[in-house]
Length: 236
Image (cartoon, rainbow, N blue to C red; front, top):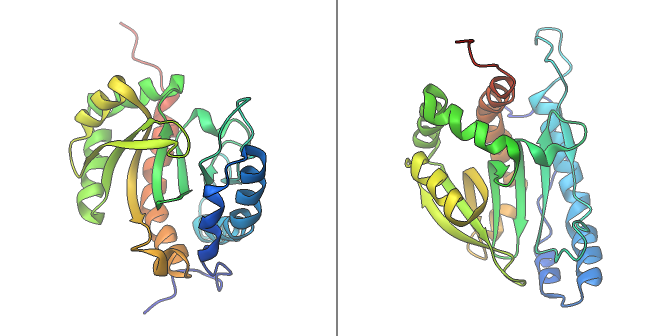
């Protein structure tokens, strides 16, 4: 079996005992505990993924902008009740939450590896238009079928839940956009590992291997979304 990474990965999995911190009632104490529990492992995972997705090799063509790995501060907006944390890969050095992102999300009841969007972003409407207009949406549906991924939409919910899954489909991308209009705050295409059933996987290096595989497949689509967002309609 060929090695997925060009160098040996350092990621060993998420800490199994770390998920206990999501139940801390005090907001600031929970925030600090979440960062301490998960961000060291997510930082290592981000370094592994960047090395895999953009290796320093002359045979690879340079891209317009490098990928950046982002970890959240979990203290914004004011009064925010942190209920999850994440690793986000984006070509944006700042302001990555305004556009698409390759995201590993860590929640009390699941871990998700996905191409994700904050549906409140002004740019999300342009993404929806591009999907409905033609083959971008078709490309997303094809990769969902090939990799057994799901389109999902989450709505906001009071803490401790934080977010609630309100739509899930292997193919109905148009319906996912309709659900966003109704109540969605987060849209994604990806793979979800429900806990505690999949704890053995998310607490192992296998999570890094599967994340790298999926992000390699999603990166060309991510780059296409970023590129097409800046296109201008033909005059007339």
